[in-house]
Length: 112
Image (cartoon, rainbow, N blue to C red; front, side, top):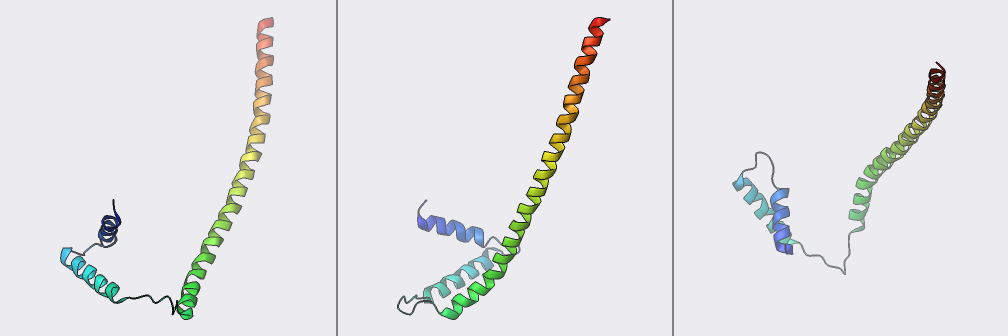
């Protein structure tokens, strides 16, 4: 798949919006092309620092929220891990006790 085919596929999927028929989708894509055709990036001018600041502000909040969720997830996983280890230890003791009692019962049964 070449770049043009990939771009067309992405455009089709991106604008697969409920209640948007073929006409409205076509109009939207034409408007998009018109806007894109007017855009010219001038590397000598660079990117407006206020645009960078606005993007940083916009995404810093999301970044903080995601970091908080991830940090909370780590804490929750550590709690679950500790519960599992504690429960495994408890079950191991019970299993050893049951194995001992079973062996003793087998030995007692052979004496009968």
